[in-house]
Image (cartoon, rainbow, N blue to C red; front, side, top):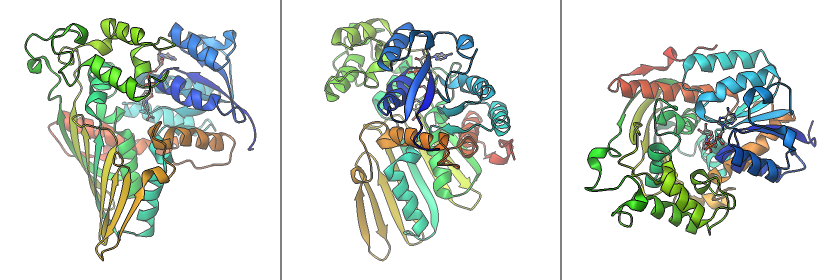
Length: 428
Ligand SMILES: NC(=O)c1ccc[n+]([C@@H]2O[C@H](COP(=O)([O-])OP(=O)(O)OC[C@H]3O[C@@H](n4cnc5c(N)ncnc54)[C@H](O)[C@@H]3O)[C@@H](O)[C@H]2O)c1
């Protein structure tokens, strides 16, 4: 039934739950009402509880208290990677429809447990592969479907992580330690695997992968570097200097409140230069990149064969000047380039036709994954209200990307061994 106001609860009011989906939903009052939040961090609980107008008795600190009753129609699970399944299983018991952040889990058995519970629940689960809901991906999919380049033969896909994003998330931040979180190839590239199997229009047959932590180690530290950038003689000259990175990024955003990644550096609200500097003096984001206890990769390459014969390479590269994806599609009659940072899609056929589309004219917005964050919230509404019965990123459709990422990590850990995807799939 469309036109209904859906009540939601948000688990985890950080970059995704608070700043992204919560903020979007709070701005769509004709569709959503945020009834409850679960957030152990008191500053974030207060901040987003107030911003979203959540009553004080519905601002939960403790997971058991939150799950003691049903709080809303739908739930957003936006906590860190390793607790998604635990919370999703509890949510299914209360019959919530779920918007579930990726990655779902890095454990094949856990993926299957969730799938089985979901199958018998009658609930809906949408996984946040937000890029599927962007104009640029719709355009590529349309061109491939129309046969604009004939038969698709192979894909060359680079996920440009960007040097400062690598340092922020995978050296200093949430995903820096393999014991505490999911492998980088899953955390960063499950979107890319999802896109690749979608474009190839086939399940994956097998893959192999290489990669390592090449650079962010003590042996590459400049002589005499301090433990923290603010105390370091290389503070102005180092590419990875925290004050340089964060103050430049904040300036680029016009010193706007609450923008990522500044809101990951400090919980202070309002954000001030003083608060950011304090966080860089005391918190993880001000540490020397050569002296963190990080152990995750900074570069990884995967080669892939799909069951229909299409092949692909996926490169997850930390050492890039900017973010965004560069993807080339090679077909029997032409090729397509998607250059996200340059803002274009270019089709060239072997008969000499050339067409260029500006991504900005395909429903793109420069923030929020090119419009994908708003796109998925809108689609989730259609799913919860029954307008969309078969969402592109339902749980069952999202499992394949996770199997591929886990196979890639296993392959990397075993010197590039060939991994067969049939060994990962558990469900029918
Ligand atoms: N879809 C995407 O494109 C995309 C982009 C970035 C991150 N993510 C994913 O979103 C998830 C959250 O990332 P983030 O950047 O918002 O992280 P974050 O650290 O900013 O937010 C997570 C929040 O969860 C809270 N939390 C911790 N334990 C909790 C619990 N038991 N119950 C409720 N809340 C709890 C933390 O205090 C924190 O505020 C991650 O799994 C990440 O991989 C997805």
